[in-house]
Image 1 (spheres, one colour):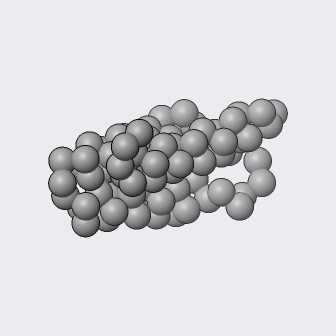
Image 2: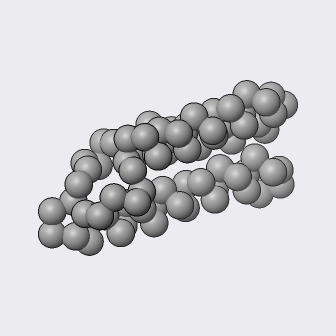
Length: 79
């Protein structure tokens, strides 16, 4: 982990994992496993793009992944 994009992508992915584990512990999870795939791929792509030297694109991809999480997965929703 050498660049800021490594740290940002790993932090975003870790937050996504925590949300998934919290939701999957409930009796009736409000979302499905496949719904976590787009932001997870977004974290990986943002890291790759950022390490390739396209910082603005990496930040925009991470922002898009975060927007997806807040609009689709709705972290404040009780499961």
